[in-house]
Amino acid sequence: MKNPLVSVLINNYNKENFCEKAVKSVLNQNYKKIEIIFYDDCSPDFSLVKIQRLKKKLKLKKLIIIKNKLRGKIASFNQIEGVKKSLKQAKGKIICLLDSDDFFKKNKIKSIVEFFNKNKKIEVIFDRPIYYYGKKNMDHCKINFRSRENKWPIFSPTSCISIQKKSLDIALKKTSINRYPHVWLDFRIACYFALKNLFIVKSDFLTFYRQIENSADKNYIKFFNRNWWERRDQSFEFLKYIDLKRFNKSKKTLDFFITKTLNKFFY
Picture (spheres, one colour):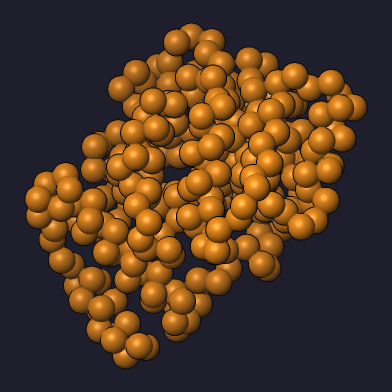
């Protein structure tokens, strides 16, 4: 593989204040064999206009813009659909996912390519996020990520995922069923590759993970929030689906029974 083309898939919805920074963080990489697929999911703001102007101003042939024509009602499914459409346009052997409110460190893609070259059997890499609250307020993630044994994996967010193109294509086909609307793409990918023992978390902090009040994850952080338990319940159901498909069996943990009990209480 040595110096492969890397495709960065940027998913955008209504992030006009951040999307330019996301794109520029890719353009400024010290690894230059890159293309950018910018997918806009019917944003009502000026996101698309800003990126179109940037493309024209800098004459960016490596920036491909996809404008979705019809947005669905379920955000997590919209994200998956956006990645699928972007992947069809991508020519790179390695895919880096990037949400349009996050951005990369300058050496991220070079570091990812070098790691793939040294670890031929690895199909997906999660690097570590830097929680970004503003220029003067950042925090390096201290979570101990892991693969899984009968429980779900602990993993980095979507913008920290780098994956071989052929592997992402297979994973999308295996995991993007139209069920479990609270289960997002990063969880689906992590669960699928954790089962295959091809899941690895790189120790480097390579991605700035922006913390904003209206982000999807903010809706789930409170322990006694109904949405949090509903998401957890659907995550267990998704795990069961994946396990049954791969092993024809699924083990139930104490955590599983607690989640099921509390969801009955909420419903």
